[in-house]
Amino acid sequence: MTTLADILRGIERGVFPAPDLSVTVVPAPSDRESCVVAFTGHIVVAADVDPAWVAERIPPGDLSAPLNPPFLYALEQLTGRRVNAIDAMLLAPALVDPVERAAAIEGLTELTDHEHPRVERAWRYRDDVHVYADSYGGLVLTGRGLAGRLECALEVPEGERGKGHGRRLARAARALIPPTAHIWAQVTPGNAASTRTFLAAGYQPIGSEALLVR
Image (cartoon, rainbow, N blue to C red; front, side, top):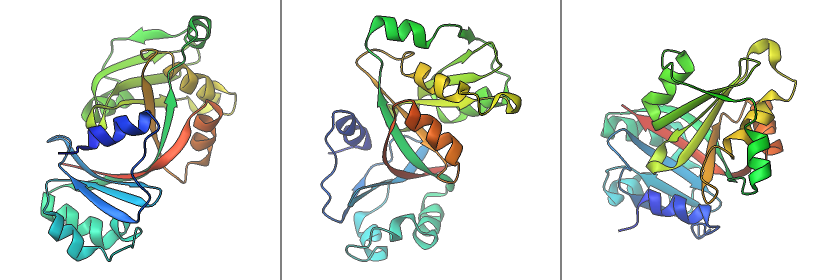
């Protein structure tokens, strides 16, 4: 049986679901989360639901319905979860060159304090979380999130924004993972500054997701 992890790992290799205007239903990736993921011409509903139940609520070929409130609300009610956010998904390969990797993480220090609000939030949605700080008070976090994928998140102090620190931290995330890996970022579409930051750091738009959590 195909899983969401299979689909995401395939995308990391450049293999996307067929853009055939269809909806694929796969099991929830974990007890922690379910989701609806949209790619070009293809939707994936990753939840423990009957495919017939999904088909009854999504008109054939309508790829906007799965991310619209009526379907998401019905999915919330059925699964006992709530939609946490609808985000754009971006993806980047790890930096491979040793010199580039070393330069990207220069000045970062790994933190062990899990009481920072950003760190606490990361542990709610990810496993194996690592947090690194720079000299300007910025943070870059990495961890295993949806379907076990490697994810990153950034925090730049308000007074340091607009100076390129976010772009540097986003690039650093690509050096904090194994050279053969890829890393994902989730960005609220309305956050144009964050979107520009990740694009400038070499991340590419992949699709969008609605994450449902307990």
